[in-house]
Image (cartoon, rainbow, N blue to C red; front, side, top):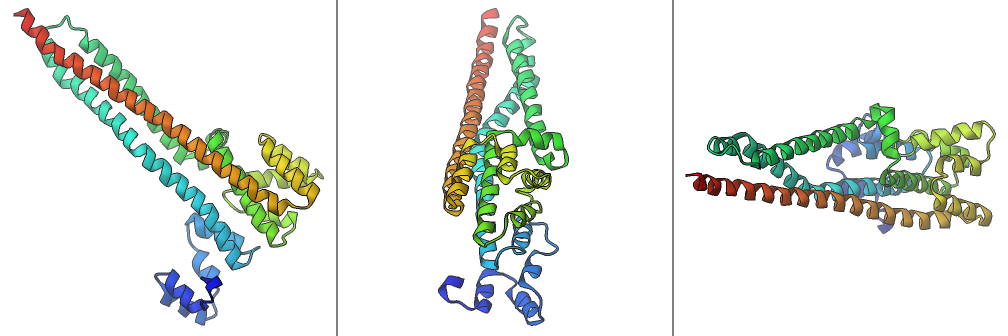
Length: 294
């Protein structure tokens, strides 16, 4: 909106629900960044607050928006894609529990020689194990920030590694574009959740006298494309034009990893439905077997 010539008051009125409170604060001499970002737990505004310390407000917003877009789209896309397969798995598990606890035991009182109960029991054990494993994975993902071991293991996954590389490249490029020195860039990224771990390791290497290229290689050596882009950018003094190309490639990789994980979950869920159909078939055969015994 700033690029279309709108004044600050109009932009605030169009952008914020509590615009009157914000305008009143500005009239009292308060900082817009402080009113938006201080005393908030939202990751977007925390990132924006840190970026505003090194970038102009408009550039800080664009950088924070780019990070938030990737993270929110990633979360939304994964949740939407996994909702139906997860429902199929839980529905199959619930029906297997229902058959094993109620239907089949009552039918087996007339025909104890049937093998259906053994099949259902085996499926019940298998599904219970997978259900507990799924809960542990979800809890581990939620609690990863408080357990360094889990955090390190999760960060080794290709999807999360690509997100880390993309976030580091995006923020570094935005800071460099504003004329920040390498030291200021690294110090700023040590304060941000998306780049904190990598930036702290790089900063410790730089303090030991290691060159920037070697420090980056020690942290991002598993990504040859990133190191190649950095080397080309430094040699040609054209890093600001090469990093966006790398970011586009990383976005493509992130989407490819998401599709791969979603496909795996969908195949697993559809397999669960196929097994459920088999259980239904076995249960439907029980009354016929009972009729043959009379």
